[in-house]
Length: 271
Image 1 (cartoon, rainbow, N blue to C red):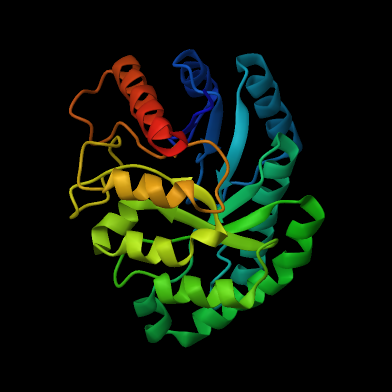
Image 2: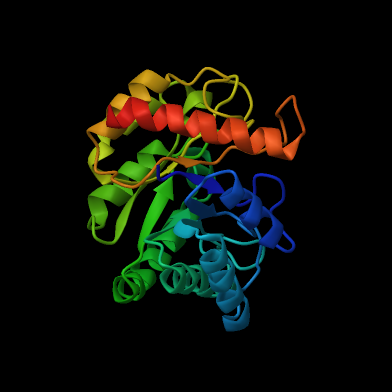
């Protein structure tokens, strides 16, 4: 059974080799690359080549990559030099994804409050997307805009981008944990299911973004599975759960429970 787990289930920096090995040993076939997801880290050719060797050794495939808008290299920065550096950072993740066989780079965008406080930030996002569009098409890697869980949420902004850019360039990454925080995520997903190209699946208590395993919180997994089943998403289930808020801190136990939860959810979708 094809099943994906995020690489940062225990740590998101440092040598990823031990985590890749353990993911494979637990039975997963794919990974969502989430290392350095909120940093300015640039992957150089030697690093990409080594990661490719590890994936081959462990029999893993890259599903998709969590891009970064960076700390000082930020594609939505009001400072043009930072925005341009942020575009280069996104291009680096596109190169990374293309080299390793993935098909999408997941990106965050400002929420409604951020846009209201500084409308120019939204202009910068649009400018960055315009510059990235030909680059992504050339690499056959799409950008997936993620629904966020902070503040007022970003659903209106996501819908605006979907109406502006073509499906072969830009789609949606639905994060069900973020959706649970606002209590209306599945209604929003229903409205944009035809643009779904990536998923971040995890659970929480409706109050905090805990990234717990599926079936441990309040997410309506039956409804989510039904929506995914009739959506444009055709890849395997991808868990973005991690150990940080799990009651048991044993790594092997966590991975076994993650695989069991992913298997259960896959069966709910495929029937």
